[in-house]
Length: 262
Image (cartoon, rainbow, N blue to C red; front, side):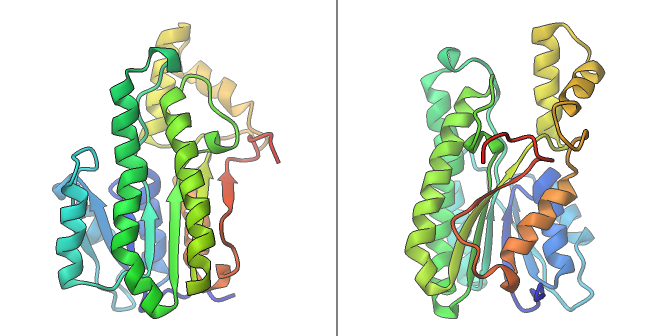
């Protein structure tokens, strides 16, 4: 199986913690040059120093806040003037705060749409010309199992994640002829800061301890535990590899089997 990413360059968003960081580390271990993209420069610098460079890789970072309109576009354009090669794009951004959808401020939908779909579009438009010239490209969007099964209490997230999934499917149809695949990885309950925030929110709403809620949630998962960020990262890395060249336009849950739809 060809998992070798040597001489490939990957751009990984939201890569200073959780699934994004684990993905960056996995891609580096497969030989890729990795460029991290997030808003905290100190955290970016620390993460770059932890990436595997045993195969002569060159790792970099880009500072950009996905919540600031225009900043991502300026940042990627400046980066590509110096380093135009991007074979792999991993779109990953933290989700919005939860709550009933009917109580959500309309501006929250607009901000979340900007942070997820619009920024994905900006980054893809910037890197796809090079991917086309190479006849090789991998776009992987880390979304959520809510694409298949909406999650109660995460109305804004459910709505925007679904839009991103439709965007990605359309991309897969248009870009496939150029050797570029577009896929979505759908994490379930994963041990990240995002899960901790959801647990805290539900703890306050339901009057239960976080530990009790964690136990209850784990019992709804067939493997009876939360997913590790590294397990999601392994799925992302496989989809980025030459071995996954015929996998295109799919939504892949990495959730221990919790999603009940086919």
